[in-house]
Image (cartoon, rainbow, N blue to C red):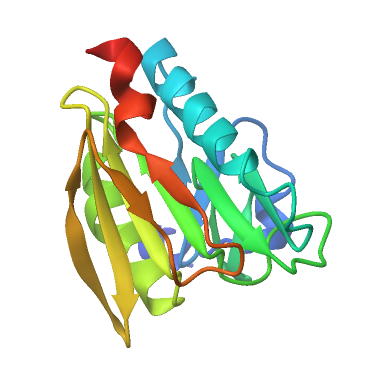
Length: 181
């Protein structure tokens, strides 16, 4: 019997749901999430959630959630910072692509959010992916154009309207970032 190699370990959702702490699962590989996000990260997430939630009063099909499991497959479970999801029927985790995903960058998650998650969200056809840079007070907005993300721009003081969503929401980035200027 040979030694167990890292590439021989392949976790699934059944393993994942038994773990203590905060984890994500990328193609069967366990990825530890960083410690509790800093206050600025938490504040920005709260402001974005509030901004989106305030626009959903007349749209009961959709909801905004923070830190919810998004089960892409049995061996890939991600936990985005914020999602706007519509017509989701599962109470335990998300089973279909959210319309909007927001990730707030930290030093320890930047590469993962900008590359691995970017590619996964694009492949899963998430309509909009927003990467927020708290230190720069900028949000990069990407819109799915067919099969690929098209960068809509870097937003710091502008309003962006998500026209290709069930509820037609927008984010006023000037209002989101105002407290930190």
